[in-house]
Length: 184
Image (cartoon, rainbow, N blue to C red; front, side, top):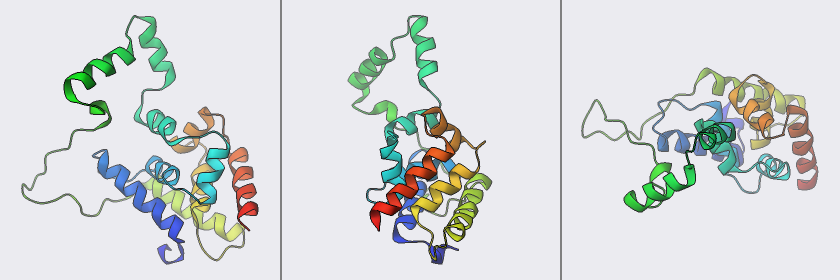
């Protein structure tokens, strides 16, 4: 299947792998694929998400677990997250809270740059991407097909994250089709 991927789709998979590795994840999830799409520039999927007001930083925050509801709850009990971030960054440097500690390797001296497997949800999204390409009569699989594949699993975290940001499956599909029309 990967031989049918466009350079943009390959960039999404590479970006997902880099995101997983940076977060210390042992597997590439569907959410990593979504972040890989948002790391792109001039592909219909990235442009469609931007058209819908979806930005990488917002998605990254949502997929990491501390959403606006959590932030509001903490604020209600007197916890000022901005003040905490400022104090941590003053002590440990800018972006200190953005980094995930690296896990210790079971094999000291070996690099962890090897293969990271896909979760079943990520594999499912990639399989759905192939189905989306076939449904659109495309011979190749692009980043836009991966995005449509992610949205096909409406109960998945990637689709729920986009829905929580105001972009349901129908809106994403319409935006992708508009962008594909603009690219032609």
